[in-house]
Length: 325
Figure 1 (tube, rainbow, N blue to C red):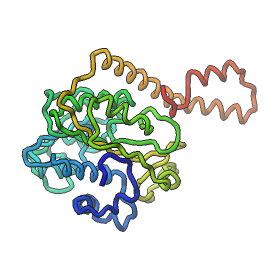
Figure 2: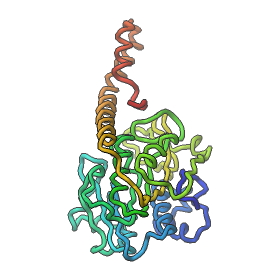
Figure 3: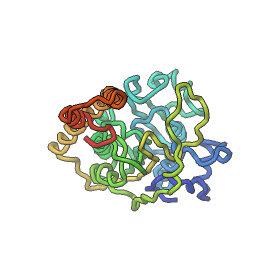
Figure 4: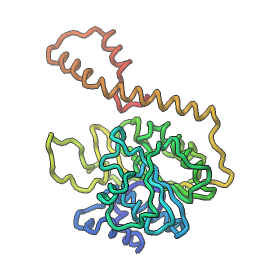
């Protein structure tokens, strides 16, 4: 089983006993449901790789970034010395549910009994981790870094992850990969992965990255276009299509070299500036898109003439949200 790869429909059938054991623990009924959901794939491959690389051991200390209250936190809490789970844990972020930094709330979401002394939930910004350099044996993040401020925010978060890792430590990172469609502010094209996450962090892949994509993943995705109030079963999410964008999951394992050096102050400031500018532009486009759509619909229905200068101004100021800033 490769560690640095794109989700594949054939992965669930890999016969490795450890892999099959992890799948069975996470989702006992997955075989009757069809292909494994890509979220279980992310968790399973992340834990599988950490086992294979020798990092899941009794004295290990780990950090989860954008960790929510996901299954791997409790799995690791029963196997290593300490897991620090960090997230914004607020209604303003992507997190939903009871705040796990309140101890009694964790009981409501825990999937099974866990060693309470080994799992600590903390509110923290992924771009400003409140830990010393060289603190953790390994760090993990599953489909979160794309939400930290577009590609520039993802790179900044990877630099923070590298900073807090011990030399020789490993980061297990899953994120969203575009397999068909245009560029996107948050999700990654295959060509974006290495510059943003590997070169941008100063870490090194533990093995060559396999970017092979199943043709069926492109031709037969789960479509996120449902009428209001839809409550039916969409089936396991292997690949997902939203509008003209189809994406799936990609997993990477990156090792911090012993001679790792942080990015320069100027490079970090440039990334921060691009992140803030990109975030502002992306939100502006999303907020004004309904207005632009209404103008277009009105023009089509009324067949009224819109001067070219107006059309050019609208296109220049408000581009499609799936195009880069």
